[in-house]
Image (cartoon, rainbow, N blue to C red; front, top):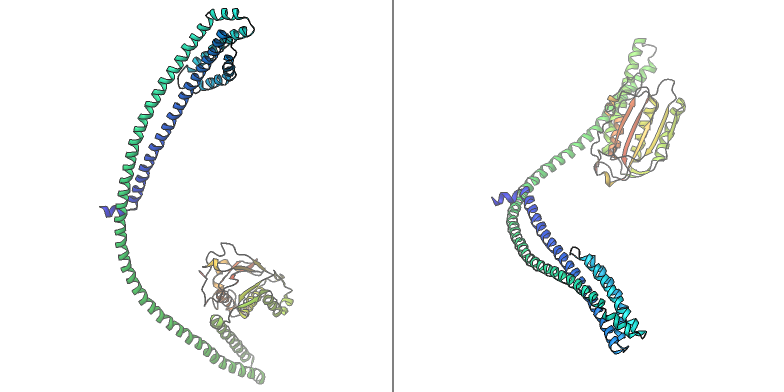
Amino acid sequence: MIRTVMSSLYSWISIVIFVIVVMAANSYYVVTTLNDLSALEARLFTTNRVINAVNNLHVAVLRVESGKRGFLLTHDERYLTDYTETLNSINEVMEEVEVSAYSSDIEKQSDRIKRLLALTKLKLNEMIKAVELAKAGRYDEAIAHVNANKGIALYSDFETQFNEIDESERVMQGTHLANLMRLRRDSVNTLIISSTTTLLLIITIFLLLKINAKEHEKHLLELEDINEDLESRIAERTQELSLYSDELSRSNRELEDFAFVASHDLQEPLRKIRAFGNRLESGYADVIDDRGRDFLNRMLNAAERMSMLISDLLAFSRVSTRGKDFSDVDLNLVINSVIDDLEIAIDEKSAQVNVDPMLTIRGDKSQLEQLFLNLLSNALKFQREGVTPLINIALTTPDDNDLKDILQVDDYEWIKITIQDNGIGFEQTFAEKIFAPFQRLHGRSEYKGTGIGLADCRRIVERHNGYIDAQSTPDVGTTFTIIMSKNSVPFSTNNTIGDTQHDA
């Protein structure tokens, strides 16, 4: 049961949630208790402030009364020293009483304090008047003023009001103290409960972690056994793949040798066929009738096409096997060299070739020249009748959509080259077919060629860790897009392409 619980993610989530809830509840109780303690302490402070303020006011009134009586009885102005000092500071005492009234927890306490302050002012005015009469030498009037019992009545009212305020505040103070003591007892109980709960949680979590550690150790042992088994299988499979790789390499070498020998051996009889055919054409033209000359021309044309096919097939097979090491190649020089080679064809068709400034990349110069030669030759060849050829070669930065099928895209820098023409175009459904060897969309009588040029282009671009595709519209033109790395190594050494058969 415990193992089942420990192996379930939902069980761990439930345990974590339970721990969080318990800790949150404990924290809530602690914070609430602290807030209540703070509130009670604030109330006690307020009550003590009121009590101290009214007591200070009471003492001040008594000191003024004492100074007044001593002066009236002895005519000694030394009694007026304390009297004067108290009068000078009594306004501050009264302000403190007035301010404390606003924070009192007792209902109507503010009204009582206002009445106390009013009585204080009346009592002070009564005492000041008697002292001023005596200081003016009118002792009889001062005595008469005192004997009128007005001062006694005022003090009696003052004393009564003071006692009410003091007693009510002290009762409230006792209530607050009792609540404080009760809250402290509750806080101790809360702390004990919280500590006990936390301790139980810690013990429970420790036990669960210990059980989980044992399960984890068990799973590790099982995983080690599985890994050992997998390593053994991988070693066996690696050995098999190594054998397959060696066999494939041997087969490729044999195939390359076969292609070279076959092309060489095939070219020799073709050269003899063409040589004897040319002799027949030049030396026996008079004795051969028109039908024989037609057969002879067909034979020579077939031999010429066969020679071109063998040469192109050999060049196609050598793109990967006989390619040169990569070096820094200035594409400006490459394209300018190709345009110079095609100068006659460009002049004959009055073609316009616009080329953006290019940059230097790592590549095989001869293969890059072959790439652009094939593409520009096709752009000049497949042109509409009566339309001046226009070819635009542009260099841009590829976007995320262009690079989505390339692996290790972040390891290299990438460029995008487009070759756009205004030729005859083709249906977009044939966009993949044109890159297959010997695939033609038009008859040999219309356009010459073996149909292997674009296949060479694809293999060259793939060797440069890129891809090429085509977008075309009939009677509008074709745009070839090339994506390749600026700084990689040959594809056969460091494969960076995810899907070389990129959808057009």
